[in-house]
Structures are given as structure tokens and as C-alpha cells.
Image 1: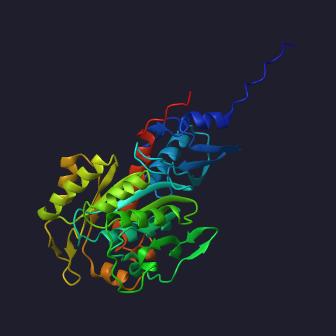
Image 2: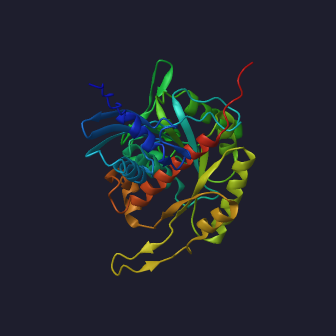
Image 3: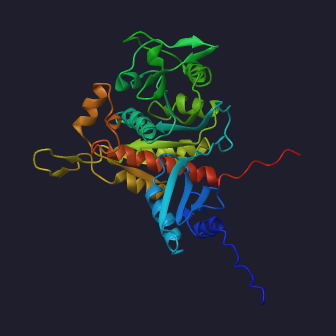
Length: 365
């Protein structure tokens, strides 16, 4: 009686990994397997269980990745059930050759800036921070406008920070640690300082504060191209800057100057947000483009930087900030806050893309 050779044992987990090597993460431009974003692959009978790691809790690519993963596994024919667990691992950025010292525990620092005042920059910064936190990221917010700190009022947070372990303890609002000169001065008190004092204040607010472990630290800068952006770029390496503008041409001239400034400071521009982009009448549903429309997108395309979205002019945004409860605190399904969540996802995506494109440091010989 001849001996029958045993059938080869198929490593189904390996088969799953091989199938997923065809699914590409858009920001990294690498497949999920080589980028080590597929983990804990288990096969129980005909059921497949695995963990997919996003590059950020705010990644805009989750739905597309889930679709790609399910289609790649289903193409093997034998899996009857696919169970995906999601995780996130935000990459860290130590800057792009800028000066300054990184903040321990803070993976990415991004500035929110505008070339001129009155474009809603602080409103955007506050809502970006709360949106990123709501999406699962660890976020801090620094009000870098020394002369006109508006962030505390927009978040409804007040008080005096305390000192513990030789570090200033930030206050907290909606799960976001917050620091502002507004916490350190009396209400209505004017800060009348020259440039060197601004730089010193920013240094303390950055490096003497117990920020903890953060994926993103957002710095709301004062408008213009003055001392604060220059000091910030010298004090720590920035992952990038978001420029906020309204659509009209006079504001876009300042966008161009702002982008030029960050280029000189060797800070990547993550993109441009068009605020007050349009107004929808609550009575008729008619759309009015009060400050023109689309100018920020055109400027971004002209200057070769990403466009991060349009945020409409809505009285609810103003009312929410006046009440100290930004619209993004309502969650990503709220229609008024939705444009901020979309901008937050795109901002996180741009940070991942820039971090991935940054060359590795040369080894120390």
C-alpha cells in the first residue's frame, strides 16, 4: 500500500497579509503590510480578525482603507467573517531644519496663522483643536496671541494656572489642555511689550508648561507677520502652519505674504482654510457669497499648497464661541461643526504626509 503524502498546511494568516499588501495607505504611499499597519492577524475557522493602525485618529482615509481591506480579504473566497479592530499611531516630527528645542512628549506642533486680523483665525484654531480631540487625538492648545488672548473666552475656561513640579499646569476645556496669557493677566489689562518680551513669554508658555503626551499642539498666533511667528519658529521645530483667510482679494494678498513668511522660516504650510466662505439663509436656503468665494482655493492652487476646506459664515459659530462652547463640542455629526471636522482630518493627513516625506536624519558616526 503506497504512502499518501499529507496535504500542505496553508498558513492562512500569511495569506491574509499577502492579500493586504495590495492595499495602500494614501498619505504614506506604502502598502499596509510594509508600513506595519496590519497587526494581530488571527484566523479562527473561516473568520479573520486583525488590527489596522491608522496614521492618526483623525485620518480621513478610514472608510477607504476599510473598504480596501474587506475587498482584499473577501477576494480570497474562503473568509466568511471579517472583524477589524482600529488603532492609531501618530508619527512625530522634530521639524524641518528649524531652530529651537522640541517639547518633550509633544509629537507635532502646528501654527494657525493669518496675514491679517478679523478672518476668524482664533475661532478656527479653537474648533480644530476640539475637533481633533473629539476624533480621538491627544491635543493641546496654546493661545499665542499675547496682546489679544481670545481663546479662554471661546472655550469658556477661566482661572489661574498653578505650579507643580516646576511646571505650569495648563487649564483644560473639552478634554484639551489650554494655556494663554489671558490666564495670567487681569481681565481688560493691556499687555504692552516689545518684541523680546513677546519671545520670552512664548518661550515660557511653550517650554515651562506641563503639556503631557500630545499628538498635536496647536498654537493660535496673532495676525500678521511680526514678532510672534518669528519667535515661535526660533523656539521650537514646527510640523507646519495652517493659514486662515476670507475669500476677498485684500485678504488673499495677506495669505501670499503669510505663506512667503513661513517658507523663509523653513516651516511647511499644511494648507489654507477659507473662513466665512459663504452664507446660507436660514429662511430661504439661498446661498450668499458675502466676501466673494473660492479665492483661498485659487491662492492655494497658485502657490502650490493644499486647500483644507471652506467654512461657511454661520451665526451659530459666533454664538457658540461667545458662550464658551465651540460648535465642534457637539460632535462630528453636527452640521454646523462638520466643516471644521473635515478641515481637521485633512490637516492631520497633511502632517502625516509631510512626516513621511521628511528624510531620516543622518546617522552619527
